[in-house]
Amino acid sequence: PKKQVEPITFRVPSGKCVLVGGLAKIELIGDSKPFLFTFFVANEIKLHPTDSSKADDFTATHVGKMLKPPLEHGVERMKEIGEFEYHEIDIQGDGWKQAAADITLRGLGWVAVTGAGTAKVRIGIPKGIGVSVRPPLMPFDVWEATAKYTGGRAVRKSSKSRSGKRRKGVGRN
Image 1 (cartoon, rainbow, N blue to C red):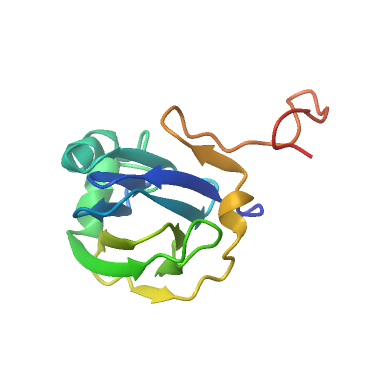
Image 2: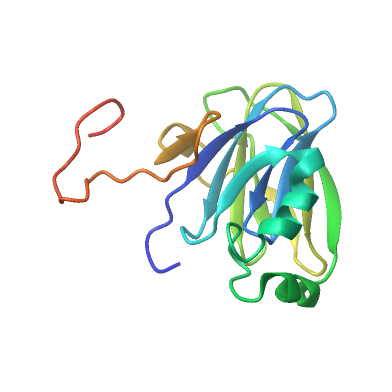
């Protein structure tokens, strides 16, 4: 990353997923209750929430355009990257005040998982990319993430407007 990473939080119910560029798919499966996923990835990587059933078609259509990386020659680059392999992980939630665990994606970043109950998370990544679960590195950042997604458009917020003046309003210092 060229700048400080700005975390972004998504509320993900069962049957939905978040595409991490064209390089990973994080989905909640089974009869899990909704969980909050806070993504700590480079700001240039586009995150896109969608239905799990539509994710593969969406990726094939938008890779290299709306979904970045891979940056150039989207479909050809995806062929070079190869097929995805899937990992299923159960995470026991610690409640809504702090993250229960981090799912690390080697070379991409990590996802903090927050919620109550058990989350059955399915991760799709290119073969050879390591996935691991660790105790949360930043367990309370779910509530201080610079952007949140609740169903509209996922946008990373800035504390300054285009004119350089500080904005005032809810959640801004």
